[in-house]
Length: 163
Image (cartoon, rainbow, N blue to C red; front, side):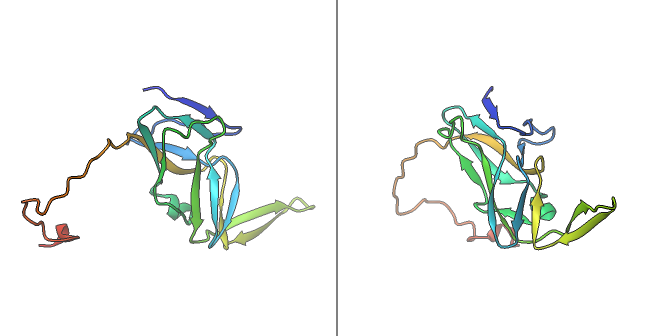
């Protein structure tokens, strides 16, 4: 299946990962997010999804460990109507934990002065922060109301781990 993609300036090109069924996405600009604040991280591309398909955007398993951020909507859903030239994908995030990062600047005597920033986290352009996959949209459903399914009960919510 071929899809048309438009990259914005400085974007990291997308490619399917070798192991797995998701496509990694990358931050397209440097952003500092303070603990307790949220941000929309631009991903540097717009994608023309085929009609009848949608994308599910989620954090990578290392996203929280690396940057202390979570995706605010757990999973983002991009439908097949978000296909305009300026419909750049973004990842909405919230910073739960500051990461200790050194921010260094060169002094006049060619030495480096470093300070620790721990009240937030830096997301740098090119950082691999999320992933997505495409799926066919759910078919039209019709609900039929019944009094009983005629099936045996499994044991209640959360019962699969009980002996």
